[in-house]
Image 1 (cartoon, rainbow, N blue to C red):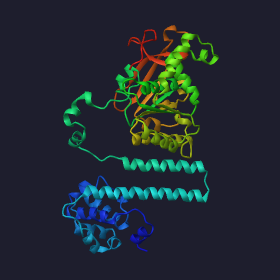
Image 2 (spheres, rainbow, N blue to C red):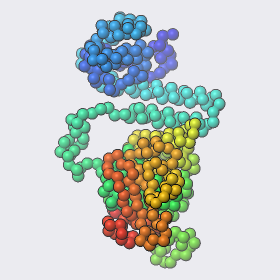
Image 3 (cartoon, rainbow, N blue to C red):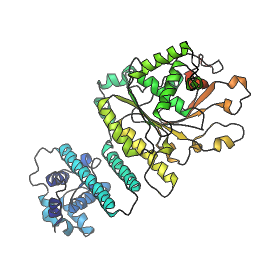
Image 4 (cartoon, rainbow, N blue to C red):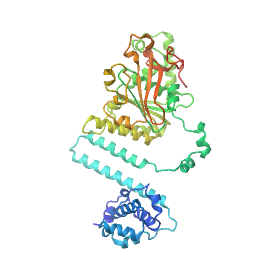
Length: 460
């Protein structure tokens, strides 16, 4: 059965005229290849003969040779493929019906859309077959589905090359707005003044890794940022927190005690005075209607997170996503844990790009920093179980509290450091903050020297 008949019989999404017009346009005007080559690949064509023709066009272009019917037929003949594309007569027929004014952008868009639909069908059919066979664990099949579908989204979201003129012309407001820093898109404020100065805020589509050894305050720091974003009086945005380690009640308790500056141990024991109760009620009132959403489902996977965020984004202006923490997520089954964490890291990065939202993802560190002599500050090589975390991240921050290692030194008490170990679009360095342990709360230091006593109002 001919390929065309097979495609029609299976009712796969195709548009053969659009494919023909793209190839015909390139043959009649080789400069059209410049508009086609960077936006479409041979795999986007549904027919094998169209893929062969486009492949040989690419070969001619790579050698800077002219592309027309004669050179293309000769190139196909050299590879023994001319008869596979139905001969010279088919090459001649490719521009039949081609309008005098080509609409290449539309043809390319149609072919790309049909190609994506066929890929989705192929992936879905493969998953159905694996489910029917039943030879694999369902969790393994689900992991494969996550990776395959997110991968398809990444293929579709790749933007084309653009020159400076295009970038400026497409920027809202043109060149004047592009050069006006006050009109440039700003990142989401973390609430920490010096950290915002260093990073410019948390920007859409970025993967920010926050890592530390246990009990350094990873969750507390992330919740402080979440609370600031969701309750910011100037521009509150929705925050989604996925906690794979703590219950939503425990997280809310932490946020309330931090906001009210109430000792958590006293709160749990029930020994609160009237002033503390009043502060807690005020904090609860501020948080009650805040667009803060917490999910404490155990064993979350990438597909669950993606689906929940899609629904949330349809209803709210999503500003930040927090995952606590990466190594507890269920990833696609791999040969070893390193490969699983690598797949998770890549999947979360693709999700952040797709949703155009910053992802603050917490991660564990290995014990290497604790076994080092002298300076126990973490390094990128300490990221646990996968080097791809460092590779995928746009930003890597570490929390370090030297008082943990030197409890006898009074001047270190309540002082923490945020170590910026990697930042694609900014400097590395460190920011000193106050850490109020009994409130599990980070705050700006009163003065920037880092030697003052903890205090100061949170940055708004």
